Structures are given as C-alpha cells and as structure tokens.
Length: 393
Image 1 (spheres, rainbow, N blue to C red):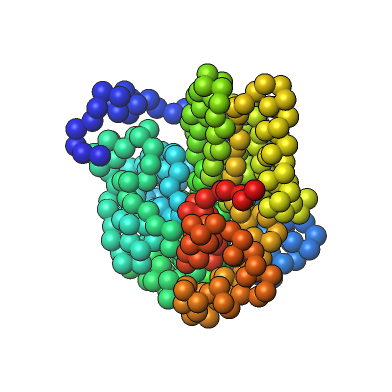
Image 2: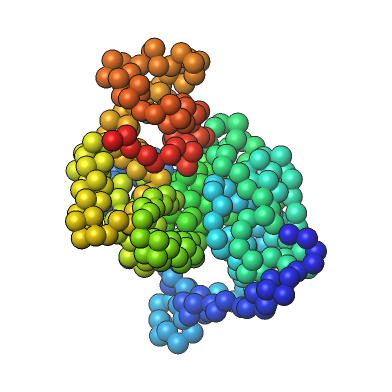
C-alpha cells in the first residue's frame, strides 16, 4: 500500500476496536500448580517431559475493573520494555491489529516502551532486519488487515541454527519479549523456543499469538483464532453469491475449495452460514476411512438424487486438506515424501513406488500426478493448495 490512502481505507482506520472487559483492568489473579495447564492423563506426562522448564507455569487472569478479588495482585509499576514481534506462517486477517494492540498495551503502561518489528518474517528475525514501530509508522495499517507492514514467511524456528540465530537476535537487541504471530506450526515453534530460552537462562520471554484463518488453535482460554471469523464471513458471502448463480442458471455444479489442512472448520462454518448442497469434511472422511471411490459415489448419488427432482445444479464445498484425509492418498503422499527425502528425482519417483502406490499414482490424471510430486512444504506436509480436488469417475 502506498502513502496515499483511499477513502475506504481512511474510514476503516478511524474505527477503534473495543477492548474486552477482561483486559481493561490492572488486577491480576495468579494460579499455582499444574492445574493451570490444559493437559490431562498421558498428554500431561508427554508435555511435562518435552517441556520440563516451562510446563506448569503460573497462569495469570486479568480481572475486570468491577471484579471483587481480594486474593488478586494489583500491578502498580510498569517498567519500560523492548518487545520484538514477527509474523510467521500463512497470512491471516487481523495480523496488523494484533501488532496495534500490542503497541497500545506496552505504551499505555509505559510510554518509553519500544516495539521492534522484524521485516520479512523469521528470515528477518535471524538476520536482525528490524523496523521500530511508532504511531506514525503504524497509522496507515490500522484495521487494514494483512501482514504486509512487516512481511511474513512460512519458515520455521526449528533447527539448531535457527534457534541460535533467534536467541542471538534477542540478546543483541536486548529484547524483554519476542511475540510470534502465527498458526499451529508457528505456536509450536514458539513453545519450543520458550523452553530453549528458559533452559539457556535467556531473559527474553516468548509469546505465541494464535492468528490463523483455519481456526484450529483453541482451548478453554482461547475461543477461536484471530482471522477465522473474518475469513468465514467473507467466504460465506462469496459462496452465497455462487449459490444464487447456480440457482439462476439451473445447469451448473460448482465445486469450491476452501482453506483447511488438518481441520475442516472453515468449510463447516461456511456451510452453516451459506447452506450449500453438500460439504465434505476431512475429519469425517478420515474417521470413516472413505476411499476415492466412496467419495465419488457420494457426490454422484447426490447429483442423481437432485436430478430426479429436476434440479440440475448445486454447490459443493471441499476443504483443501481432503487429499490427506483419504487413507490411500495419504499413504501415497507419505511414500512420495520419503522418496523426496532420499533424493530421488521427480522424474523417477513413480518407478520407486510400491506396487499398490504405483497403481494408484498411474490411475490419477496427469496434472494431479504432477501436483502430488511437488516438494513438501517446510513442515513436511504436501502443498495441498496446489493439488486440484478432482476425482476420476
């Protein structure tokens, strides 16, 4: 975005989101013990073993101004802090407003506090490419959505070299905290980074903010992720337009692919808001172990049933993660990724597959075979957004 703002952008910039009541007070109630951590049974044991230095930390509740909590601690002193912030993972609506809220929070407590943004995502974090975020710098990004003020990356903070580079940056810039804004993978990295920093006695605190349109990071404390509500409303409006077009033309079937890798939350929420004729959920496909043939039959049966009622149109929603939810396709992708790791050239992968995987691979249309051979993403998952969701009848 250039220096000149459109009338719409100016109007949006004037809106000031309301701060939730639970974040308006200065009283803080602190809980002690492992009860503060949302993990039970075997999971608790696994997490405690993986995060011995950060598991079981005290949980702080911000209390509203009207709360009567005699056992709460009232914070009266707010020393100046230096906080770093980085965008990591896929872009999502609301990223800029998270930075805006962070800037307002640290400056409302102490105007001498500094917010340092890292340019270009985690690559900028490793290379110490920074931008000091001020009111003047941030003025044109309020309520504008996107990640483009700082830029983003899908790289991870996972390898030993990456973790060391992140720690070096935090120590060199004397950061009191590093805020990582991203999805499941990014918050997993944030948790591991916090553990490593605690073990190394690095004074920088690591904070993960769940910002992902997939809506797959939530618990009893986090109702949903930043961006999920926006993406569902926008997509539902578009899907409703397509439904109207299908109803008007009376001769088309629309297959709409939506975001959602491991979770089909976006597809489900959009289906509830827009009422398409059919929605396929990856979780149901995986739980029922449906094959490509099963899914194809379901779609064909629905089309036939509507045709018998003289309805020759419809809208079907498909999450991008459906490919990995189909057992035989998931197994095929695992074999392909294993051959990638062994350095087998793409041109020769088919001949290295097991007999059943080779037969399935040859059954698929050429363009889908090409898409399945794309090199995995940084988290070792398939590039599902590049794979066409089509099934051979």
